[in-house]
Image 1 (cartoon, one colour):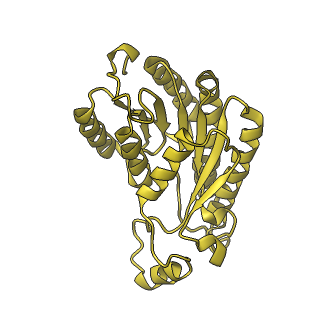
Image 2 (image 1 turned 180 degrees about the horizontal axis):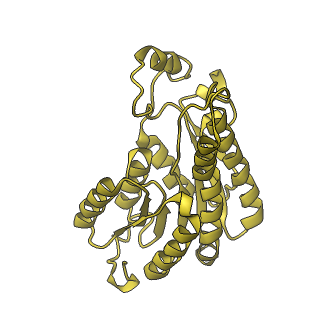
Image 3 (image 1 turned 90 degrees about the vertical axis):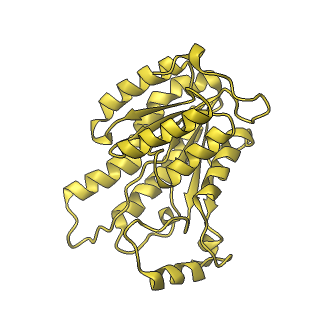
Length: 259
């Protein structure tokens, strides 16, 4: 693990120089974009992954070539949440502080009510709701010391459910509610906010161009976004939103107002 004294300081003019952020699911897709953007602004990062070992290792090596010993990775399954919590405590202790927890890791797939079983329910609820709650519990003592923040990556489907994806939509709705509840419970020391992406990245195996164009047509800006839009919003909430808590920011090109 990285020792506090071994981590070089980022340039002092960077907005988050010397601070430490934990990103779950931080090696791929939106999580990777968040990791890269925060690193470019001076952050020291603890990047969690579950099965994406090669991606996490490659990302760590690349970013550490740019700024040595600025990124560490930690593997953990949300199905073994107690073990992951213990490992995270050790990692945060070694880093010396924690300034922000970003609950980004997520699972997304259809759950028709006619065929969904307990395994799918448990998988989606555990990843999208249970883990963010218990990781927030684990991080809270450290975030109180730094007067830090928690950012939950939710979804516009939390408020306007996607047909056939009822368990996913419900899990994200619960995460939105959890965001507001924790903002009340953890204030004034810790701010808790959420970011709700719209059409940012298509699901990895989604090649239905007609359906994609239908979704784009339902946005006010008539275009897809990109992961950098989420990453920039996250940076804003960390560094420039001292009087914002309990809020969900939709980053969706206006889709939520035209749905």
